[in-house]
Amino acid sequence: MAERENRRGNRRDREEQAPEFADRLVAINRVSKTTKGGKNFGFAALVVVGDQKGRVGFGKGKAKEVPEAIRKATEQAKRKMIRVPLKEGRTLHHDIEGRHGAGKVVMRTAPTGTGIIAGGPMRAVFEMLGVQDVVAKSIGSQNPYNMIRATLDGLNKETSPRAVAQRRGKKVAEILRRDDAPAAEASADAGA
Image 1 (cartoon, rainbow, N blue to C red):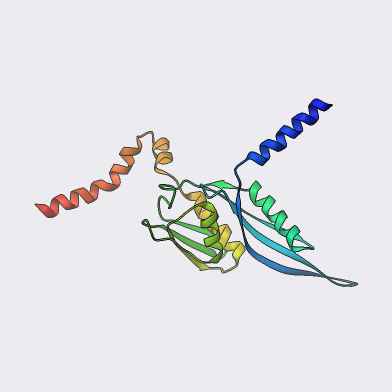
Image 2: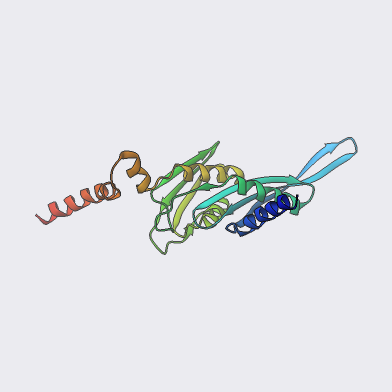
């Protein structure tokens, strides 16, 4: 019996040593339910959680009190995290589009020093992800839930050169060289 409790204690210690996540409250709504006795008020929270090293997730929670709603949303976000490959740990590898319902977002890679150029909910996702340079635009739905879902849809589509090389059975250098080859040919033609 004591052995079993000791094992449980160790598991808790391991969970506490896990990487710490940063979280950002994106939206909080007061919701009401009309009943025979009047209106019952509650709160709905939307939270984005990330480790700022390439992992991010979002969650929503409802409760009678704000702190409880935020706690529920944070727990859900930690369970639904995704990993996104980042270029040099600061930006996206390529331009991507994401969609969810009527929400559409466009995300573009950016040079060093650009910063995060994105609106409210998208900015929260990029900050929690650890992106430092990105240009993003939301087109269509301004609903924060749909904007976050569309952003994560786009981030799920992102692939790194390493993943593409592995899928195609080539070396990373071969894939990256193809992008530079037309530019090199054009400059050689201009010089001739």
